[in-house]
Length: 248
Length: 150
Picture 1 (cartoon, each protein chain N blue to C red):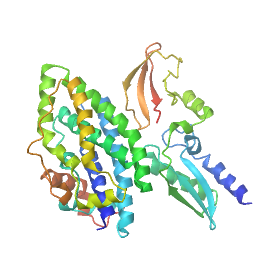
Picture 2 (picture 1 turned 30 degrees about the vertical axis):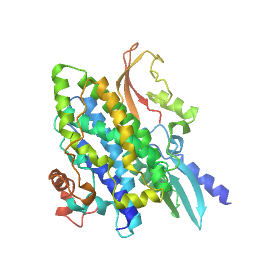
Picture 3 (picture 1 turned 120 degrees about the vertical axis):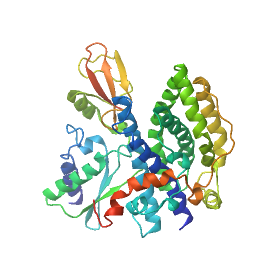
């Protein structure tokens, strides 16, 4: 696999998997408005994943976006493990999405400066959407954190539980380094400081305590995952697995 | 001759309604970025509104159907991402159509399309389609949709 193809695939996979997780809320949201909001955010992410998968497939030359989404096993997926974590209760989902939105805002701001025109164009478009996704999750973090004693306690637990998965946002390996050198990719390590201050600001307002960076989970760049990804894929890919020749 | 043909294509595209808001056409929505004639083929550049808008696929199919119905078969649709679609491309006329249809058009301040009041309350930033948010008018009490500015 070419470096650029893999680089794009990693971004696409995180987007696709967190989109799928959000889609699981459809018809189960705590209120009708929230059900619609989560489905809307999921759809935006799915569209972004599709654009990225199509681009990765184009570089590959022998695959389609559908092949990439539906004909790979969990060890061939490179999404952040944060994205595959279970929805849990509403607070768990909101915290997961909030941390990812903060990362996405900073990441796509940098990627929009890429020398690669397609990546830059997809980033500029995505940023418009990320801004209101973040506004939504940011508002909820404050409402739940600075809400009742119970809501504060519950969302603090959600935060403590998911925190160890945030380290992967800021990792770079040899593939990244080459893409960064070519001024196409983003140096994720450099995003950590801004991400910390963005997250700190909201957590303080929400009266939540930021957990320490310890025992951080790693491995997704090599296709290592929590067992949860396999559960997602068995549902997401069930149709092409059962009927390999099925067409839209 | 060639220019004449391009105008014909624009006219045909002007009759393809937005699948979600049939009162405006895909041209008025601003998603048709360019029509060219290259090597005996019309190339229609289309940009998506919202990344995940399900209507994107539908309006591509509708464009194909409408062109074929007008005996135009030598065309292809090209998806372009740059520049990113913005509601600023909608003309005043298009915004007026939206308002008459009952949707508050994409202006910085939402306005009740029924009674024009700006004394309104946001119900949800997310509506029945990706492009709209939900409001309620505090004067006439009617709920309404607002086309988000992006």
